[in-house]
Amino acid sequence: MTDVRTQRNRVLAQVLPLLALALVVSGVAAYLLLGPSEVAGWIVAAVGLAIAVAAIVLFHRFPTAEARKLYPPGQLGLARVGFWWLAALSQGPAFIALTLLMDRS
Image (cartoon, rainbow, N blue to C red; front, side):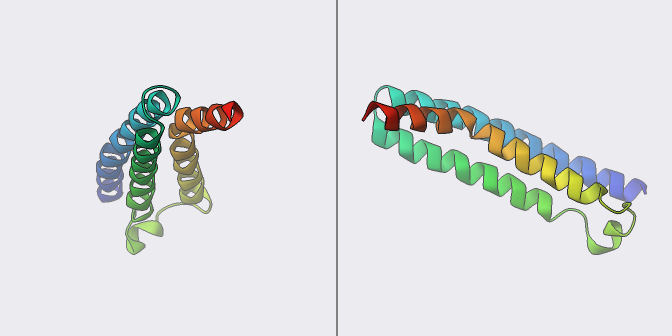
């Protein structure tokens, strides 16, 4: 179980900073969309979405097939759903800015 715990901690140490970076990039995209440059905002929003997707893909590669057997039924799926929610929430600022932008026109 220690090997799985080590593997999980390593994956979390990679995924959580990526999701935090996606949140920051989404905030910058929101600023750009509502302020200086709409085109740059769209580009930065796409980059933030790509970072969030990369984090989810990285998390879905954990754990290895033999380590999956050590988890009780439903526990791994619940963790994956939680990370999908974090990825969606990290895109919140850009989504809100896009809805405000569409409301302006």
